[in-house]
Structure formats: structure tokens, C-alpha cells
Length: 409
Ligand code: HEM
Image (cartoon, rainbow, N blue to C red):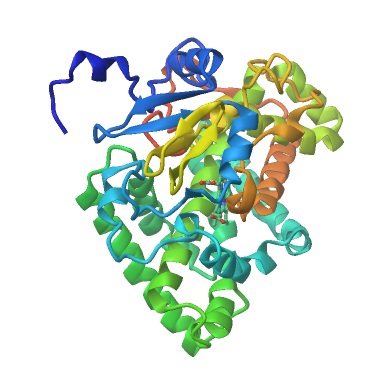
């Protein structure tokens, strides 16, 4: 990578673009303008490489479902999100998100049973208990409290720990490492160390589950897939790391930003309090409006392919931007407006689209619906204890969010 850019290079916009503007929930101004002007455009990445950025909803859906776009980070031209992902590409076991058909289908099938709608519905009473317990504890204090640390993070963390059979007492250990893995500016060494420490931890967990199985996903994967040889130990560790990290980074940030969004829209918050049956629709709108997966889906073309009227050549990287696709004016009326009554949220791609669409989406929906409904009903006087301007947003993370959210009631 050179420090001095040629004029031609400078003309290629850098991605990800810095968020700014007056609304912390909007994509970067420059990104929004690009999406308006060009459906697909070349961008420059952290390592100086170029990739195509796909910004429109219909193009994203068509391209992401096309098998000529590969998820394999080992292929030349892959638009790595960080130095770590690039460094790790060698022989390291890949996670689900980095596999193509048919390998991807085989591994994904190992998980689908546990994330089926019916299974997740059966988890609702326990999720409700977790949410109520955290709110009880919060209300015991006189406030203000940080809603991220006291509520938004522990909800998905407790849920994923129970699902995987990982002791919640260790949450600090894996939350710190998970944060490093999601930081765009973590060095390859830092991220590699975090990954390896998680791998050792989860490898030990797998051995414990082999000796003493419990009623949890890790035990089931060990018994049904590892011991039968369907998955190797390193690949299973990589799968567990993905579940543990993806399972709480995304949902935690959605919960805290959802609370902030509703506090910024008090009439809609009051409507949800009066009509809790509106919560599922409101959650879909929150997913669309906030689109926390702000680094988009990363792929590389294995053959020449046309996207949005442009020829993308074999070997070129492609980034499918969920945030602009969720603000596409040809799909959503006044997309910049947060409106829990809109009837077009079904078109959102906050969980991705196609075969890699989020495997944990039913679980995330259940957690978000219960967290939002319980918070607005049980803490009707909830308010921000600090001005929005003074909040620190996670602009430099693969998943958008707010660092701390001090609230009173
Ligand atoms: C609101 C919360 C969540 C959001 C916004 C979200 C978003 C996403 C997105 C956009 C993708 C697709 C990425 C791509 O195509 O490159 C994805 C995939 C995935 N998510 Fe989520 N996710 C959430 C919660 C969860 C939870 C709770 C879990 C697990 C417990 C989870 C596990 C996964 C896994 C394993 C994949 C890879 C699926 C595959 O490649 O087949 N996610 N998620």
C-alpha cells in the first residue's frame, strides 16, 4: 500500500465512508449520494485494493444469490474487511460465512434445526425471564445506568451462552475478544491473538461437552457432527466462534440503537406501549432503519458477471451494501423516515439475502421483540440521561452501535 495516491486513485472513493451528518442513524452522506447517482461504483479499501460497491436493493438481491460470486476469502481479489481477515485466509478453517455451495449447504444444515422458528418460539419464555431479570435489577437502582452494559449486551449474551452451553461467568473474556474481531482498526496480530484465545477456550469447551454432554448446541454438534467425522475439530471451533460473536454483537447493538431510536420518536414509543401487538412490525422497521451490519456482504467474482448494468470481471471484489439497499427510494417510501406503520419493511435486507441470509434471524427477532416490548412497557418514563450529541457511536466497527447509552426513568 502506498502513502501517496495518484490523482486517479484519489478520485476513487474510500470505503467505508465516514458517517457524519445530523442523524446518527443515517448512512454516510457520501455513501447516500453515491447510491443515488450510481447503482454500482468502484471503491478503494483500507489496503489500497479496489472493489465494486453495490448500493441498490434489487441489484443486491440478484447479485448475492448468484453463485458466480464467492464468499471464499482465500481467493485473490476478495475485498477483506480488515487486515486480520486477510492474514487469516491461508489454511485456517473457514466459517460458514466464508464457504460456497456445496460445502456451505452441508455445514449450514448442521445448524438450521436449532434455529428453526419452532425451536426459537420455545425459547421465548426463557428470553422473557432474562429480559425481566435485567430490568428488575436496573429498576432497583436509582439510575442513571448505561443501557448497553446493563441491558442491551447481557440479553443476547445470556441467550447465546445458554444456547451454546457456555458459562455466562466467562462473558467478559469473550466479549473483549469479540470486540477486537469486529473492530475495523484492530491489527492483524491483535485479532489473530483474540481469535486464537477464543479457539483455545471453545476447544476446551468442546472437550468438556464430549465428556459430559448437556442440553445445548455445542453438545449436540459434538455428538452428532464431530464424533461422526462430519466436521473436524478446527472447523467446529470456527463455527462456535462465529455463533458466539455474531450471536451477540449484532443483537446487542440493535437493542441499544432501537432504544435510542424510540427515545428520539416518543409518539411512536407511546404507540408501542399502548399497542404491543405492533412490536413485531416495529422491530422490522428498526432492522431496516438501523441496518447495523454496516460493512456489507463481501464477495469475489469467480466469472465475469453483470451487476446493475456493469461488467464485473472474474477476480474483482464486490461489496453488497445492506445499509443503502435498506434506504433505496425505489423500494421504500421516504426511506430516511423512521415509521413503525410502514408496509414496505418486508423488503429489508438487514439479515442479508439468499443462501447466506442470517441463520440466527428468528432468534434475533425474538430477542428484539421481547426486549423492546418489555422495555417500553415496564419503563414508561425511560429517558436519555445525556444529550445525543455527546454519545459515542461505533463508527469504526463492522457492526454499528453506540458505546454507552446512559438512561434514567
Ligand atoms: C439483529 C441481529 C442480527 C443481524 C442484523 C444479523 C445480520 C446478518 C447478516 C447481514 C448476515 C449475512 C452476511 C452475508 O451475507 O455476508 C448474517 C449471517 C449470519 N448470522 Fe446474523 N445477524 C444477527 C443476529 C444473529 C444471531 C443471533 C446469530 C446466531 C446466534 C447470527 C448468526 C449468523 C450466522 C452463523 C451467519 C452466517 C450464515 C451463513 O453464512 O449461512 N446472527 N447475519
